[in-house]
Image (cartoon, rainbow over all chains, first blue to last red; front, side, top):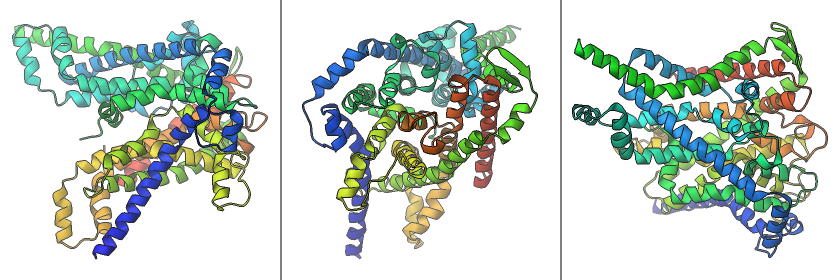
Amino acid sequence: MKNKRSFTHFFIYLFLILISFISIFPFFWMIVGATNKSVDILKGKLFFGTALIENLKNLFANYSVGNILINSFKISLITVVGSVLISSLAAYGFEFYPARSRERIYSFFLGTMMIPFAALMVPLFRLMNSFQLLDSHWGVILPMIPSVFLIFFFRQNFKSYPKEIIMAARVDGASEFKIFFSIVFPSMISTYAAAAIYAFMTSWNSYMWPLVVLQSENKKTMTLLVSTLASGYTPDFGVIMVSVVIATLPMLIVFFSLQRYFVQGILGSVKQ
Amino acid sequence: MKSLSYKRYLDLWGWFFIVFALIGIVLFLFYPIIYSLYLSTFTTKGIIQEFVGLGNYVRLLKDNLFVLALKNILIILIIQVPIMLSLALILAVILNDRRIKFKGFFRTAIFLPAVTSLVAYTVLFKMMFTTDGLINQILMSLNLIKEPVRWLLDPFWAKVTLIFALTWRWTGYNMIFYLSGLQNIPSEIYEAAEIDGASRTTQFFKITIPLLKPIIIFTSIMSTIGTLQLFDEPINLAAGVVTGSSIGPGNSLLTPSVYIYNICFKYVPNFGYASAISYVIVLIVAILSIIQFRVAGERQ
């Protein structure tokens, strides 16, 4: 009996190690690849090389990577601030000022969550055209700010917030706006962190909409650069690897420094 | 009288808090989806616009590329989503077991792919799966294959590569949902089942799966929506591999989203026709979601 158990345990660990290895391996390969020449990567070299500087030079010489990184950070940060602010305000309104009319609007909001982006792309493109926002960062940012998922996420988290505190603050004469900003907001920091991480990840990784909106080389984002580098017929694998590392690094840093919130952010509000 | 005006005062604040999101969602979600329906009754060539009624929808049925795109994502949906979700569920159950050590490490490692951008990981997979690339070299040195597999050059293997990549990226992500669901199941239920002599397998099918049902439905609907709108992966996996406008060998990686994009921005733009395609996708998403709710017997 005991032997049988340790036998299955052995296979369970073997399975876990195999899956973990497959999960981590591409990261390892990407980092090793960034230090190797294109030929060596193709040959399947799996240890660190000396071509990192050369790859970086090749990438920075042909593309204004600094500028592109600034574009990516600018778009992501504005989207995060706008999206988190507007979504949390709305969730607060829905949760703490109950009214049948607003409840209807809320369920209508939830219904739109299932609409695929491709269905919105054509009208949004025309809308941005009429606003004269094509080929501009605001054209990328504005449609990404309203997020039904984040409104839902904030509302689920606000549900556990004691209503008595708000009542008490009202009795003390605090204005509704002040209650939100100086009482509710500070005590919900972890919810805000989770939402901000989610919004940052979505925006930093977005591809289709920036691809449609941005045309000028100097306005493009990191994700677009990676895609461009990899779609040539004679790609330089070393340079691509470096660009993939640069595009992935911010997410890895956010992940490892804020791991707890990160998972919470992805979970959203599935927890009952 | 005073309380009535106070109620109105609070109601106005309620509107104030939601008004920004309301404007945003009406402008960038509600208006586009309605406009898209209107647009789908026109055929557009550049600036010339002609009313065709349901003509675009009729044309769709005879459009080989559209039918192929639909077939492609349905194959991926039917094969990839069940594999990924079962794998995620099995991993979650294993990692929820108290006797397993190094859980934190395994959880982090398996979740890590979910951090990468869709474009970045697709590019990595594209480089790994070239015909003279790493994966073939490993498989050949392990004597699993004699000749290199033409991963990205053969219609069948191109889909296999895409399925493998998608599974790599999303299994850990779904696992986290199941793990959180499992943590909400009280351990007393399992203890009681053990006393009653229920085997591990019985416990899995009679306790774990029924109690996780809401989350399983949630993840399968999310994965369905995600698969139906696949764009980043197929377009980047196909770019620069095969010549011409084919998305993957023999258009084996063509998806409706890629097709919509091509109709709008690659060929002579026909926004009306593209809108009709997008509406068909919305309809399929709605139908599949309803089916999944029904099959699971949930009402929400």
